[in-house]
Length: 463
Ligand code: UDX
Ligand code: ADP
Image (cartoon, rainbow, N blue to C red; front, side):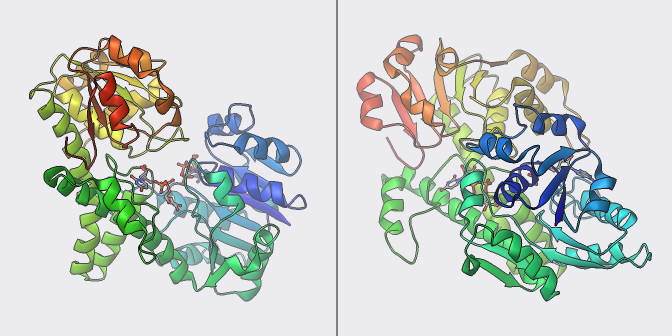
């Protein structure tokens, strides 16, 4: 059996590395148009930071795992082709800001149709709007060269930062399709290391919709607890205590109830907007409005956090240095897509603050590119003022201490473990007074921080 995966990103790379590791008899070829990305997968500095991923790749690469840009050849040789390309939110035309941009998926389908000389099982791995498989099927059969295809939907549920563990021990694997034989072929791949009872099979559309629904439910929980955090700050309740109290109800459960500066990542917002677009398309206005509110609450939470910083610091942060700890959308990843940090930093920059940003895994180039993107207008133009602020008011530094040196405040935006190990007395000595800390992840202990002399502001806790 030979597998090809088109797209060597955060999903395709780790997923295929795990399949190759667990199935030494299957040749797995991961292809991408991006030469630099492929070079990185073939080097010691993988393009994706994930705890434990280096070992998985090292074990399989060169044995039965190949990374290359030979897309046509890989398709031709494979029995099973995974589509794992990006499906960002459309930024133009019909459905702009909501619908998924399916350009890359369609191009893949056309490329598969052109290069296939024998029967192929085509697996949708990317998260796609419901009924995309229909379009993929039509495109595949449009070449009319007599080659047949089975289309399966096999959405990935791994979370970044825990991808290796999620791939090793998934809650479930979901396979949607029509052909029993094709479904069984893919089941056999996963059954090499995952118990059969954890492999669920459904029809194509249920599988596609389940992925959007899972992400919408997860994001909804975060927005729900974040909504309550605003009420906690107003009333004197403590959101972590509320979360603990409700989480012990077995019907609610304790996970995904951590109030924060707002959810980020490549999936939640994109998938909900996609769901909203889909509902509107089918005339379900109330359903669309219901889910859209989850994203609106998240935008409110990010805005509320930067406004709280400004308000607390005597209504001005102009020319004040703010140390920003963390820029990734969560710990243990170098991914910054839709990170709350981007929007908080943009708002503070526009208040003319000077930001010293430290993240253990995110590069200075990435931080500047993200801020330019967040400041850009609909045509992608960044105005002169914003450009100057990004140029002159941002420094990216090498550790927490440099970020805090001579700072008026610290904003904790990602929950990296190392932030808990910092020598806070040293940090306090280096800061201006009052030494404000705005903890967007409720990472820090109030008693310990206040005994050193910090003024700590956490999410969902009044002072
Ligand atoms: C998510 C889904 O969990 C995963 O199943 C799907 O395949 C892809 O999308 P991911 O975006 O990688 O995974 O990370 P996740 O752990 O879900 O966190 C998303 C965001 O929500 C992060 O910004 C995180 O900090 C935030 N979050 C999560 C909270 O603010 N509070 C919580 O309680 C949980
Ligand atoms: P995800 O988080 O879903 O994995 P990424 O953006 O990290 O998304 O990865 C998607 C990858 O797919 C990118 O590296 C991109 O270059 C690649 N890609 C997009 N379209 C094609 C295509 N037609 N052929 C090969 N690779 C593609």
